[in-house]
Image (cartoon, rainbow, N blue to C red; front, side, top):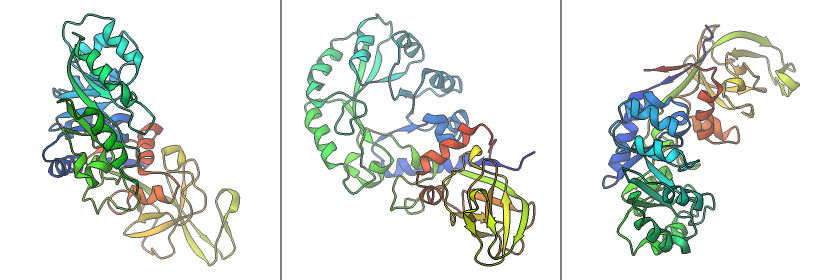
Length: 356
């Protein structure tokens, strides 16, 4: 069996949820488990965060699996309904739905439901992705209040720059301005906002990336926000090459050894979700030391410098990211974000998930 596996530490996921509850102690937690729980496996992750007041996902199919797994608290469809007929399944599964466009408003008005649905009305405060313009909110709330298919209303938005210097002030001011006259529950904080801006910890918070032990910030590490990594991407050395000064390594021969080197070949590549654009020098942990990658990442393999790890042999363990190497470090060296790398693992379908 190929030695590549992603080990998922469910106790770390539970720990990170408890940390969120400690930080946002006056808020309910809507744990974001979209994209197969950011690559960690949906149903196993549900079991680890069962104390969350809610779970946010994208599809009714995911929601049905979560209900089947025994989760009885709130489930929110983050993008709402995609087709009119979906509303009956949402009713059956007792789902909360985001409403962010006129078509979805029509879905709610064109049926008669036995059990009214809880609606999260999304306001576009500046990200310009999903949501209604602020000047339409009074009309929309009036419409929803008059609709017998609607039960509770929650007002929500999403921040574009909570993780950057610009912060949330402009968007939060906009949200408060159009919602202050209403006594509905509110939900605005993603991972970055709930960590950095106490004023965003309203009735609900929506942690995503921090639950999985990665940082939502470029300039603040996961260790600094006290989260534990949930996924450890592990493999082994499958070959060793002793190369001379001046010899090349890998496709394109774009790495040339400046000295004699000992190179290890690891069973992991971009076909498995490791980033192809990881540059030479990306940190990686082999045997008992941190070293660096060299050369281009191949589809099934990558290269590491073993020159200072004398004990490394064929079969030595390699950690691409996990307890020794942060996924955020790998992402930074690859021109991307930790979110993408974690999601890519389960998306590749070549990496078994092993729960510990």
